[in-house]
Image (tube, rainbow, N blue to C red; front, side, top):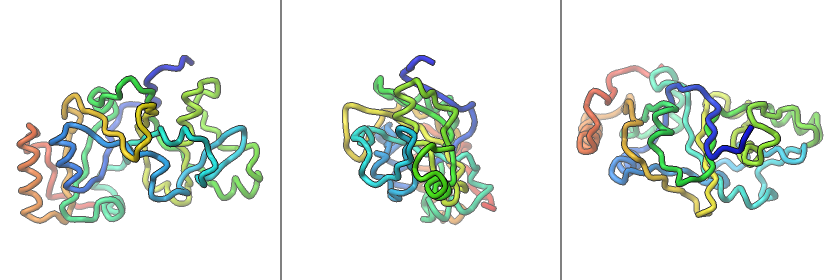
Amino acid sequence: MSEAIQTINMENQPLYRYMTFPRLRDILERKSVGFHQICKFEDRTEYYIRKENKIFYRDGRVDDFENHIYCLCFTKTAPDSYNKLWQNYASDPSAVCIETDVTSLVKCIDTNGCHSFFDHVVYADLNQSVIRYSLTNCPFDNSRFDPENSMHQLFQFAYLKDINKYRWENEARFSIISPYTNGEWLNAPLKNLDFISKIWLNPCASASDEEEIHKIAQASGIPDKKIITNYIAK
């Protein structure tokens, strides 16, 4: 496998990203989307890295390259099918969920020639692996990553998470390695807003919330038919 600039390891399918109203407004007005530095994720134990046949938790002992990996996270679960996602990631009544798909998103985001990787998150029982395997001979190698590809080895640790804590998220990630910055956020320009197929409003959105979202969407050329209301999250 060649070390391509862009690797897409998943089929085209709908993806969903929850966000606050201010974050939606920023995306629409600035025509850019923020990738979060992976070492600044709120739960610093949520993933681990496999390196030299050992598992290392996120504890500050890994290499500096982590400071240059940025992720944009999505769920593959539709907003009307699992209310826990709203409760955990967008509980404010004015919050929204953007629906997109793999192909449209990749076409719209300018990665500035950086290596990027799009794949499903792989879930493993990290506690069992540490206890049973004493940090060696990790049985959870991700077969979707090429062991001979140096970029895949760098990206790998951004796609492995604890099955006991995070499986319900049903996550996919679009990741970038950027040599140009090591700040907490990387703002990637959007070529256009065509990647937005729907904007789901929070099931508890008020009439004024709905009005504001319609207003900023219309100002950005997003038609009302793309805004989804009046549904029940199960």
